[in-house]
Every structure is written in C-alpha cells, then in structure tokens.
Image (cartoon, rainbow, N blue to C red; front, side, top):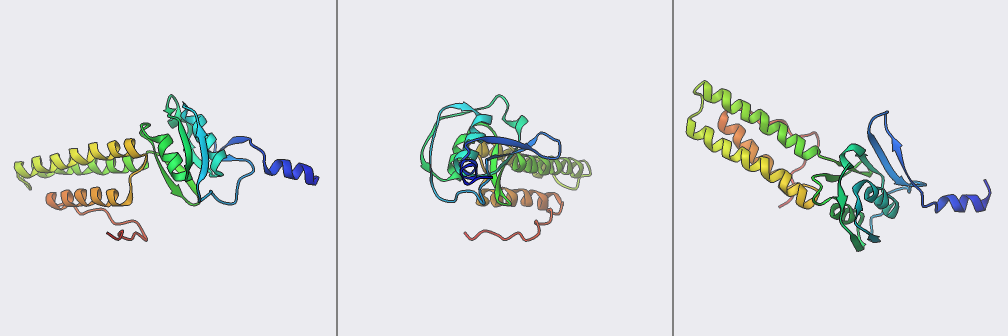
Length: 203
C-alpha cells in the first residue's frame, strides 16, 4: 500500500459493526481501531438521534470499542449531546433514560443491563427463600414483611438509578449489596461469595 493510501486509511471516518460469534452482539468502533480509548476530553456535537446511530457516532468520535447487543438499542432515542467531555460522560449522557447501562470492560465499553439483571436474580432468590422460611415458621410474619419491604426498595431503586445515570457506581453497588446481605442474614440464607479479586472501595 502506498503512503498516500495508508494515510487515507488511518483517518477513515467509516464506522462499522463487527459481528461476534454469530449473535446479535457487535463491537462498534471507528476504523481503523485506535490502540486504546481516548482518556481525555473530546469535542462532541451530536444531534438528537436514534440510539444505535449515537453509539456508532461515539465510537467514531472517541475511538472506543463499544460492545452491545444491537437489539437493546432498537426503538430508543438519544438526546442531543454537545461540548468537550470524556468518552465516559458522553456515553452516560447518551444512554440516560434508555434503561441501559455502560461499564468499562477489558479496554472497551460494554452496554447492557447486566447489573439490573444480577440484582433482579438475587432479589428473586431471596424472595423465594423468604417464602420458604415463612412457610416453615423459621421466621416471623413481621420479619417476612420487613424483608419484603427492603427487597421492593432495592428492586425499584437499582433500575431507577441506572435509568437516570446510565450506570450504577461502585458505592451504590456496595450499598445495595449490603442491604441484600442483611436480608440474607435475617432469613437465614448465606450471602453469595464475593467475586475473585474484589476489593471494598475506600469511603
């Protein structure tokens, strides 16, 4: 390839999805892919548009790979975003109100509903365990009602905060996990083991 063609390819504005493993998940990135996602602030001026278009535009503007199941973006809109900001803030602003969450993962961004699903599964398990313990008279009706109240609070709070912020920060994850750990202790169910390498945040 000539030097002229190499230079043209380096600054190609094309944004293209890459299918992964034959499923609906795609990696969206500006071509050619940058060595790493931009860490500093970039100029962003994007109109209100479809969310799938926005994710591709952000991949181009920031040089960040974005892993997402494209079905999650269907029929969703992103509001206008304008100014100098980090890739993180541009993505969070773009996803607000969509019910989706973004998190850095192995050098790229992953867009999904992973935290919401994880909390929902744990709440469902604790709710079922509470019902079993109540049926066995292992816990009182008062304790079961108090536990149910806590579970409803976390069940509503997690998706609400993610919808408002497009992520659940570390302190909030710790806080809600601690509340669910407390429920588990009150009904006699051991909390799940912490992920390998997990370190509590400094408060």
